[in-house]
View 1: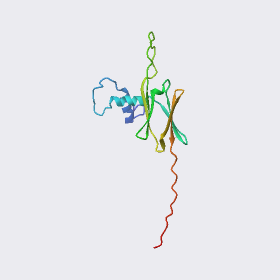
View 2: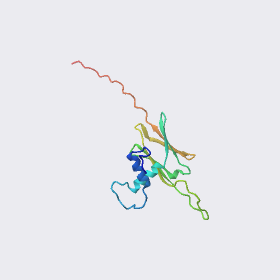
View 3: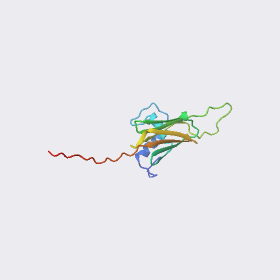
View 4: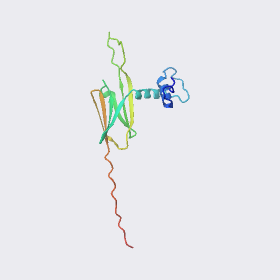
Length: 158
């Protein structure tokens, strides 16, 4: 596909297109500067997980749709003291005898999103609630630093 026709001449679009179109064939072959299969899988998992981020006066809220998932299927972590990682796995229902799928459109497999948290995020005050298929991760903000008051230095007479 020629991205220039669509006005998308960025190398980023070209690379993403190549990553999304990579097949599992030739998985053992290594080419110079080609992304690894793990990188491609993670990129697809991140691209398939949409999220909304809101900023409130005292917190940041991350909203991710998680229909049909149990709390054991969702993992919320903080990496490197400033990266929020939301991940998990959507599993296919076990097939029952005598039942077959006519159409399978719902996504299954692993999903993941990473967010770099701002400096004023309190990583010790994070809560997560999944209600009605929507995961809400609330990250409280640190209180703003108090402005330093001027300090008076006593002048001694020699």
